Image (cartoon, rainbow, N blue to C red):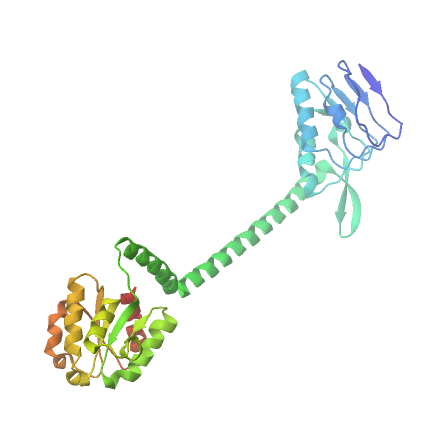
Amino acid sequence: MTLDISHNYIWKLKTLGQLQNLKHINLSHNLLDKVPNAVTKLENIEELDLSYNQLTTVGKHTLDGIDTQHKKLGTFKLYLSNNRLICSCDTRTFLRWILTTKVKLDNNGNYSCLVASSNNINYTRVAENFHHFIVDCDSTVWVRLGISLLVSVLSSLICITLLYNFRWRIIFFFFRNFRRFAEKGLELTFDYDVYVSYSDDCVCFVTELQDKIENEWGFKICIEVRGFIVGESIATERATSINRCRHIIFIVSPSIVENEWSRFEIERAKYEKFSKNLQKIVVITRDIALDNIPVKFSFIWKDVLLIQWPVEEYEVQMAWQKLRLWFF
């Protein structure tokens, strides 16, 4: 029932065998730096003397085992005097256990522990300074929590900023993929996104438009100077090109009256719109009043999205934005 192996310079203990009736173990005045697992496995142990060893703390698993024994037997005695106990945030579970456990401790649990502060190591009483350690540990936790929250907020702000700055690109990316999926289901195929109808006095604007649509927005544009096959009928090429495009843009300028093909393209756009192949018809007016727009546009006027191209720079940016929105 009693085993005394004190004063033996034991630094490690692997097993105690099958001592089912053992109740009292004296392991004092040895070199143990942790409580042996062999001790916690004994079913009837009710007194454990670990004084005068090299223990710095007692692990939670061992503490739970001791509490279980105390609850089962109604009593348990633990002796820990004159160990090298450490008071730190890492050992606060053990320190709190000393102050709250119902297990009977030697010296009433009034143990001394080592404290590292300002590069000095001092002994202090656990009961007298426990709350001071807890405050320091909690402050560390709050600092970590504050840093984590700050990092989370900054990360969220960065993500929101990136999403806001690139919102149109993200929207266009998803819309283009969704649109292609829908068109595939409807068995619609387009070689170009936009067909542009224009007169000779708008060549510079068409060049700018082409740069915006293809290089910045990522759409494909069909224009006469590069989209038509040489040697083919102009009428056939215009009709085929409009059929192969998802949208059409009419750039209306004063010289449109002299453009003999504009009437043909309007008629073709009306037909493609009626056939549900053409999705949007955009009319951009430049240097021409609405009252002076040719009557031939009345054939498609109810299906037209109109942009009166402005002169002021900030209004021009808004016009580009409106055109881009219409495209997607």
